[in-house]
Image (tube, rainbow, N blue to C red; front, side):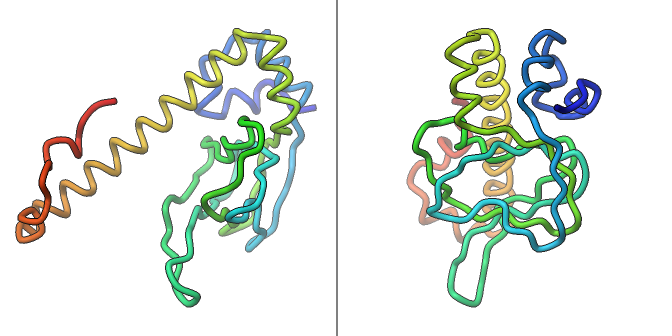
Amino acid sequence: MVKIEDLKRINLLKNFPDHLLEIIANEAQLSIFGTDTQLIAVKEPVATFYMLIMGQVAVKRELTPKMDIILDNIQSGSSFGTSALIEGSTASYTAVCQEPCEAITLSGTRMQQLFKENHELAYLMMLGVAKQYKNKMDTRAQMIMKTLNENPELKEDINDIENLTLVI
């Protein structure tokens, strides 16, 4: 069991009512991971949803056997492993602790069951996940536009540049 105060430190859960935080607290575990611990592996089933209390986790994908690309650096207060909330999902990235990490972990299977039992919990969790996804996509679109502005020669090859920042 995890303390409700710890759950309130997670961005995704900040506005959750206490009665829903209690449900999550009863299901959650507090886990500690060492540096270089691989939490999620590309193409493997994602069974756990993570909410980082302390530390940093790199989300990456291999470009070549000698080169990885960092897609994101997860910081304290953030969550990842959202695919665990979808039955049968596999990872499209690898997640590795960059330093010792403390995380709240939830079984994806158990959360799926709780969503069926408590629609308010399901709605608020999915709304939070959708907002996180939109924020990440907006940030990525801004990064692409900045790169294009700094390298105008790249713009010539893009047919529909206006749709890069389309709000979904």
